Image (cartoon, rainbow over all chains, first blue to last red; front, side, top):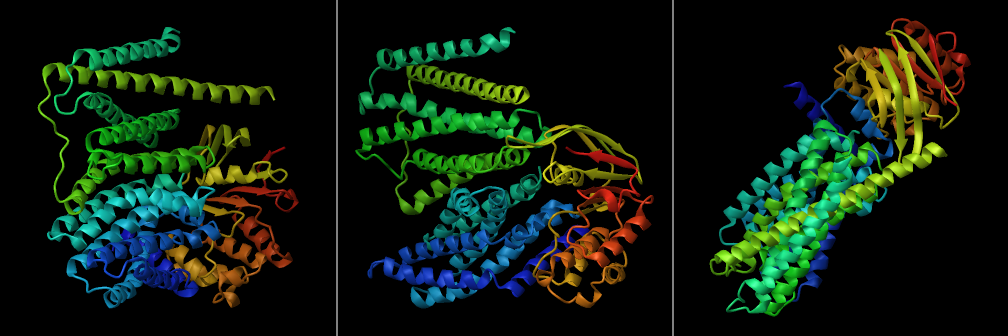
Length: 213
Length: 227
Length: 194
C-alpha cells in the first residue's frame, strides 16, 4: 500500500476509534433522523402523495448530514489537534480524505436505520433511491468536510456551516429527488456522479489552502 | 501618475456615456415588441446585467485562483471587490427578472425561469461568502478561505444550471424557453451596446471600490505608524 | 537552519511580531525570552509552518518530518491512550522501529505505567510529558519548544534538562520561555522580546 493510502487508512481508523470511544455523533444522528421522519409524518397532510414523502426523506438526510458535519472536526477543535495533524509530514489532502471517509461511515450507519424506518413509516424504497442516497453521501461528505473545515476558522462556527453548505447542496437535492421520483432515474444518478467527481476533486485539491495560511 | 489618477474617472465617464447611449437606443430607436409592448424593453437591462454579474463572479474567481497560485499582494482584495460587484449586479438581475416575470406572466416569481432560480442560488451562495469573510479575522488564513469558496462558486454556476434544468423536468414537465423570435439587427446592436455599458459600469465601480479599499488600508497603516 | 529578515505577523489590527531578524546556524540553540504575549509563540508557530508571516522573510531549512514542536496545547487526542497517540504519530512520521521508540520515550518520561490510560485523564504535567514524547518521537533535526517546562514537576523538569543537554549541539533548538535560567547555559544565541 502506498504511503498516501496508508496515512488515509490510519487517520480514518483513528476517527472511527474516537467515535467508538466517545459515541459523540452516530447515536445523535440516528435519533435525529428518526425524529425528523416522525415530524414529517405530521407535517405531511394525510392524503399527501408518496412523492412528497420521498422529498421529505431527502430533507431529512441533508439535515442529518449537516448535524454530523458540524461534529466532524470536534476532536480536532477541542485540542487544536488540527495543528498536530498539520505538523505531521502526511499530505494535507489525506486529512481531508480520511475525514470524508469517516463522515461517510457515520452517515451511512444512520441511514442503515433511517431507510428501513422510512420504508416502515411511509413507503417502500426502490433501488434508484438507495443508489441516489449512496452517491449523494459521497458528495455531501466531500463538500461538507471541506466547508466544515472552513467554518472551523470562523467565530460563528455553528451558524456558518449551514449557510456555506446549503447553497452547495442544492444540486445534490435535485439529483437525489430526481432519482427517487422521475421515471428515468438513471439520468439523475449520472448527474449525482458528475457532482461527486467535480466537487471531490476541487475539495481534495483545495483542502490544504483551507487549513494552512 | 496619469494611469492611477485618470484611468478611473475616464472609465466612469465612458460608463456614463454608454449607459446614456444604451437607454436612448432602447427607448427611442428600436421598435416596440409586437407581443409584449414596452415591457419587453426590460430584456435589454436584465440580460446584460446578468451576463455582467457572471463576468464579475468569474473575475473574482480568477483573482482567487491567482491568490492561491502565486500570492500576489492585493489579489484577495480584488477577488472580494469583484464578487461584491457581482452580488450587486446579481441582486439587480433578480429585481429586473422579477419585474419582467410580473409584466409577461403576471407573477413576481417564476420557478420555471432558469435564469432567475440560478441567480437566487448564486445570491444565497455569495451571501454566505460575505458571512464567511466577515466572521474570520483578516489575514492570510481568511484570504485562503475566501479564495477557495470563490472557486467553488464558479464550479457551482454550471453545476447548478444543469441541476435547475434537470429539476424543471420533474417539477415543470413542460419545458419553458425564453427564446423569443430571432433578434433583428437593430435589436442585436442595441443589446450589445447595453451589454458594453453594463460591463464598463461594473469595471468602473470595481476600480472605484478598489481605490477606496486601498485608501483605507494605507490610511490605517499611516495611522499606526504615527501612533 | 533558520534565517528571518524583518519578520512581521499581525492578527487583524494587532501586531504580534514586529520586524524580527535573526540567523540560527545548524545545531545552534536559540533562547527566546520575553513576557507573556510578546510574540514568542507566534514566532515558533511561524517557524513550524503553522502560520504565515504577513511581512518580511523567513527561511526554515527543514522539512516537516524534521521538525519537532511543543506548543501550548499537548496536541494529543484526549480519547486515545498515551500509547495509541504516540503509535499514531510514529506511523504518520514513519518512525523506523516505532514501537520500540515509543516504549523507550514513555519509559524515559515516566509514563510507561500510564500508557493504557486516556490522555484526557492525564494531569497537566503528564500531558506536557506526553507532548514532549510526541515531539521527540521522530528524532527531529529542528526542535521548536514553547515553554517546555510548563506544568512539569521537579522530576519531569529534570528529565527534560537531561534530554536537552544530551541533544544540544547535535540538534537545532528554538526554545521560548519566560524563565530562561534553566536552559541559559545551553544557549548559543538569544532573542529577547519586549
